[in-house]
Amino acid sequence: MKKLLLASAFVVAATAFVSSAEAYDSTGCGLGSMAWRGQSGILPQVAAVTTNGTFGNQTFGITFGTSGCDPNGRITGGTQKMILAFLEDNLEQFAIDAAAGQGETLTTLAGIMHMDEEYVANKAYQNFAAIFPNDNVDVVDVTLKFYEIMKA
Image (spheres, rainbow, N blue to C red):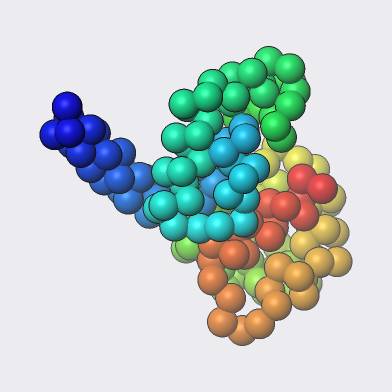
């Protein structure tokens, strides 16, 4: 029994490690996600997912709109991944376009997010300092901040 438990823990940890390289908000909603919100790394993600799965609270939350879940919500992980992939290759041009409030990167991001181009351009321009707080900002931080601003 101990070997099975140890093997299961290893598989979960290995899967979390592989997944965490591309996932920055991979646990979804639920009590576990709320308890470990704001923390990063393998252990908090595994703990959040384990809590959600063990107690079934994520399903309950989605059904009844509790624990940070929205029964009418959309699955947005794909959109965030697309934005991250795009910005990894276009971060410098995005910074230039956001500072100007216009440009092809803003047009592309508006298309990815299914939002009005002018709205995206204005929000990026107005929130440039929040999106790019310094010269050495990380693309993941830019993606998360940009997404947060656009969805606010």
